[in-house]
Image (cartoon, rainbow, N blue to C red; front, top):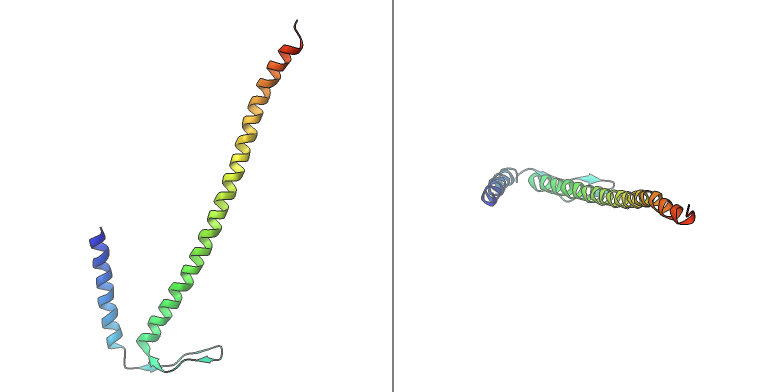
Length: 106
């Protein structure tokens, strides 16, 4: 399986290098909220945009993962409390029967 993964990565890198080499001629600049980038090749800007998108999605995924793990921990604590209450209620009836027989020796 690892061979297949490395083969896919190699193919993607091959196409990425080909794409970047063919699109190195047009120069562009980007303006974002008052910030103006220097004139860079279009391929570099596209690569930078993909990298920023990847980083943003990674941050969102990490935040979502933390939120879900917190929810799971909360549900586990609630489940344990309910299990303890159920066990206490099951034993409560047995404790009443045993204490009720001791009180009245008839």
